[in-house]
Image (cartoon, rainbow, N blue to C red; front, side):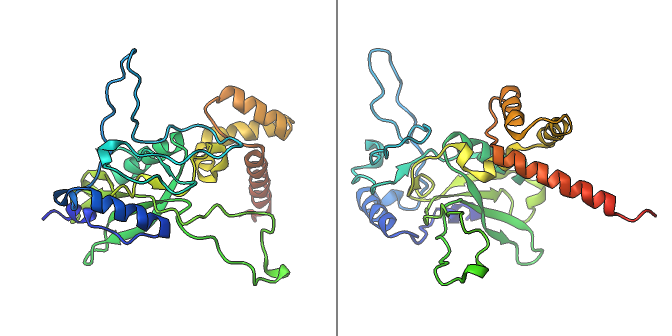
Length: 278
């Protein structure tokens, strides 16, 4: 049996509410589908005089002041209760092959940014003999629980005004080498978890400006060079932000990002001046 088929086995739920939803899903679906991956069903044709009434996932929209209503999954997945309050069903990255792990992860990040969430590497799996990495589980960045800091003393706190977005979100997606014995010279597959665990989130979609990792990946060498040029020209942080937003309308950089980049530039410049001359 191909090792990729093992990924279809059930995983233990990481959230009490998720357990109820998965149990209902397991009871409603046929037994012959228990060991298969549940892909997002194709969307029905959208005729002009017949609106599309069933969409498998939540359409992404920027956050609003009012909470979004619970999301109902379509009839293609069987009769299911409404998702718990505050949960959402967001489109997972499509299952597809890529030339390398880096290409697969880059495609996943592009997809998740457009759909209101982010993922990070978790649970790396390596071969026992050569210690070659052949599988990753990419989890939602809100997957774990926030750290309990109630017993910390004031002098032990490092970031007193920073809140945590961790909510124990169960969502995850696999990235697997097609050949586990030679992962460096084979294609890599984006593969969904079983029973919609690549679809469920215990939170609503977010705008990319609220997700630091997406903003960090957007700050390419070209953007950093542009920030340096504007800094040397004497532009303020606010003016620099306005210029970048005009030149790069699809970028989600913030004034805090520009400030941090400028601070890093100053540190690098001080380090170069402090280097001994050989």
